[in-house]
Length: 231
Length: 270
Ligand SMILES: Nc1ncnc2c1ncn2[C@@H]1O[C@H](COP(=O)(O)OP(=O)(O)OP(=O)(O)O)[C@@H](O)[C@H]1O
Ligand SMILES: Nc1ncnc2c1ncn2[C@@H]1O[C@H](COP(=O)(O)OP(=O)(O)OP(=O)(O)O)[C@@H](O)[C@H]1O
Ligand SMILES: [Mg+2]
Ligand SMILES: [Mg+2]
Image (cartoon, each protein chain N blue to C red):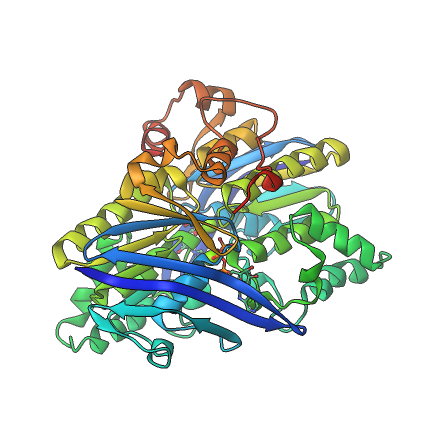
């Protein structure tokens, strides 16, 4: 479903070059959940930006089949400030010429634990976690083939997190979409994903299964450190 | 001495002909030098309570309280609406709260200048960035916010707020985009700074184990109320149904399962 080979990204400014990704390769099968963890600034978001076409790679190539939805790391910037939540949820459906009725949108809000009353609210009238849920709800309503999620639950309390993670699993079972999940939360990535990529300084330092991560069967010392230092 | 003494604080908002209560009758005392953890439901009023302490409330909200004192002086309802310069706050959405058209360097310098500190600013900026575990401070200093990763944005925001040398630092989800390694370094830095400068620290977070490990005391918010409060290290032993419910929802690395437990909200009464 997703095949990435030797992706490299270099950001250049005033003659200064910075290599954000070096030769990153991975495969994700259809219907699979794939995790990316690693150091802050190691290029995790950049990988998703390349897959979604927001950043172009300087070398390497990737193949991605089907439609795509991207839940950004920064939920606030992803919501139009002057549109109501109802409109924000309807718009992408309308653009794809899908039939939109209000009950579908209400259901979409309900899926992410928000009541009907949020339909007429504006993004600035929501808490951080409520905004994040709108963004996730919008991505899910599109029923895309591939879902890219960047720290989707770090702004949520753990009870809402549990509901959303369960929901993602249920929907994935039903619709067989493919998911890439970026997170710093090791228990979350182990719960959601079978296969996990560990990044550091723009490079893949290890690819590990969640079973091995749980059992401590870890090859790389930096990955070990991440496990040991997690609360 | 208490740095904050707040009695019976309520925050409401008029919406479509009815009044919604965002925070309901909360009383809160914070000791000088204390590290207080705030956890709780998404939408329970954590950020709004913190914004009230700082003195930056949305205009459509109405606050009331029986009494409010900060640093030993009583503050009237009118005065409570002004920003308190001895408090700094690291906001929940760091990248959107940084100025998009200024480089990191210029933003941190602004913070120093605000404190009347005008010498060797270039050097100070680099040192500050190193303190928040930025690996290549020279590049990051010259970067604009859009050129930073999520976790780098969070750290720049923390660096700026520490440069202000506040008496109270409120950090709203300060480390949610940081890997375990850097997260520890930042929390250590906050704790050390608090100790060295006699700064009081409030950490708002959804990460219960983190709060339990780093704070002295923790309060738990649910639907606008403080429903539970205990020594941070005793958080996992709490008897309150909401706190217990939250702890049960946490995924665990050593406990593989197909589904996570969820909270039964109807079983929690206030
Ligand atoms: N548009 C850009 N221009 C210049 N540099 C960039 C740009 N986007 C990202 N970078 C740099 O690339 C590196 C990787 O950034 P990225 O956002 O992918 O990290 P990340 O792994 O997602 O980190 P975090 O966990 O902190 O979000 C960082 O050093 C960042 O400064
Ligand atoms: N400007 C506003 N107008 C109306 N309601 C608002 C406004 N800002 C916030 N709210 C509501 O106030 C409540 C408390 O919001 P607050 O941001 O304090 O939550 P929080 O506890 O910080 O949640 P989170 O953990 O998701 O950040 C939420 O239900 C939110 O929808
Ligand atoms: Mg990122
Ligand atoms: Mg908040």
